[in-house]
Length: 123
Image 1: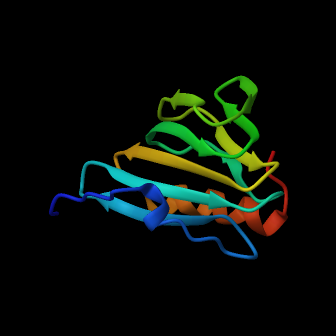
Image 2: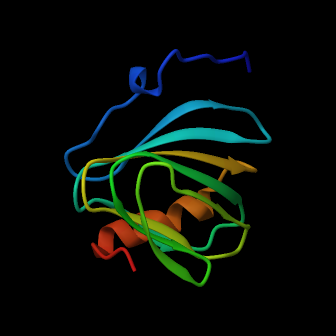
């Protein structure tokens, strides 16, 4: 992996009309850096992957589940959720969050997210 530099995260922002859009910014076998772009009402369903997560809300407002906490998030909100703890986010407004996960998620981790999206419920 080569070094990555964006003068602004907005260079990489992209939304999907039907579900949250994870935009890969950088990563290797140890870590993955993702911009998560959500339209109002979109969500990443609550799940419990085997990866550590650091999340920083860059724009927008919403709700976050982090372990046993449920909290409102706004620009500047920061959360760390250790591997194996619940996490999920739902956008009330257009929302952009930077996710740093280590190690990168597995296929099983993604399956839990896909299952929640198919159910149409975030919690």
